[in-house]
Amino acid sequence: MHIRNVGIVGFGDIAKTYLQALDHCPMLRLVAITDIRPVSATDIPPGVQFFNRAKDMYQKSSIDAVIIATPYDTHAEMAIEAVFSGVDVLVEKPIAVRRNEFSFVASTALEQDRLVVGALHARYGREVEWFLKNHEDLLKKVPPLTSFLVRLNDPYMKNGMVTTNKELSLGTPWLDSGINALSILNSILAPLDVSELTLESVGNVGDVFEFHTLGTYSFTTPWNKKGKGIIECSWGEKSATKSTRLGFADASSIVLDHGKETVQLIDSGENVVFYQDCRNDRPRLVNHYVRVLGDFATALQTRISNLDTMREINTHFFAVLDEIENLKKVTA
Ligand SMILES: NC(=O)c1ccc[n+]([C@@H]2O[C@H](COP(=O)([O-])OP(=O)(O)OC[C@H]3O[C@@H](n4cnc5c(N)ncnc54)[C@H](O)[C@@H]3O)[C@@H](O)[C@H]2O)c1
Image (tube, rainbow, N blue to C red; front, side, top):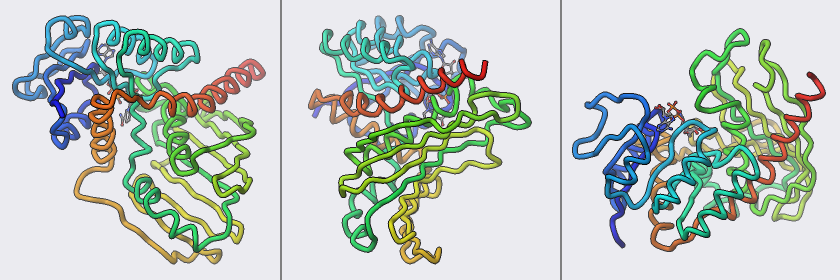
C-alpha cells in the first residue's frame, strides 16, 4: 500500500478532528491545508503548507487526495473543482444539497476517473459498529422489529435564534443531521426499504421555521417485518440527544446512544437487561473519523467509492428536502 499525500480544504471545527484522526492513519500523510480565512501559524502542523485558495493548493502542492471540510452548500462545487484538478476526494456530508448537483459530482468523478467518497461519519460510531458485529446474538433475544426512532438533536438555538455560527456551515438540522440519521439506518437496517415517506412536520423553534424536522417512515427490515420509523432532527433542544431506538413487538427496545457510545437492551418493563460500553480513550468524533479515513485510504487503493450507498441514502435525504420546500410554500 502506498502512502498518499492529502490536503484539507476548510480548516474549521471538523478539520481539527481530522487532524487528530490523521495521527491514527499511517497510510495518509497531511501535506497541505487551505482556508479562505487567515489561520494562526501555530495551528498548522509542522511541514504542512498553507494556502488561501484551493486552486493554488492543487497547483503548488504534491497532494494525491483532498478532504473537503467547508460549509454544507459548497461541497459539490469544491468536489468538482478537485476532480478537475486531478485529485481524489473525501467530501463532508452532505455531498450535495440538490439532486442535480449530486448527479453532476458522480458523473464528473466517473468521466475524470477520480474517486469521490462521502464522509458518512455517524455510521462509524463505535456503538453502531458494535451493533453490526453483534446484532445477530442480540436480536435472538427479542421479537421482530416494529419501530425505530432516531433522534439527532443539538442545542444550537435559544429563544428562536441560532446561538452559534453553525447555521452558516451546517445549514439546518435536516441538512446537518438527516444524512447522519439515514446513514446509521442504512447500515443497521440495510437494506433499508423505506416504502413510504411522509414528513410529519417541520416545526418552528421560536420564530425560525425549519429548525425541527420530524419524518415518519414505513419500512421493511431484513427480518421481513414491516414497521414505522421516525427521524427527528432539531436545534431547539436544551442539550444534545443522539440516539437510535429500535422497538420490538413486545415493547422491549435496543438503544444505541451515539453520544455516549453505548448499546442497551431494555425490556418491556424499562429495565436495562444488557449494557455495552463501546468507548475507548479517544473522543467519539475522532473515533468516527479514524474509521472514515481508514476506509478512504482503502478506497484509494481499491478505487471503489461509496457513491452507491450515498445514492440510496440521498433518495430519502432529498425526498425530505422536497417535502420541506412544499411545506414552506403551504405556510408562506
Ligand atoms: N463541526 C462538526 O462537529 C462537524 C461534524 C461532522 C461533520 N461536519 C461537517 O463539516 C463541514 C464543516 O463544518 P465545520 O463545523 O467544520 O464548519 P466551520 O465553519 O467550523 O469550518 C468551515 C471552514 O471552511 C472555510 N471555508 C469556507 N469556504 C471556503 C472555501 N471556499 N475555501 C476554503 N475554505 C473555506 C471557513 O473559513 C471555515 O474555516 C460541514 O459540512 C459539516 O456538516 C461538521
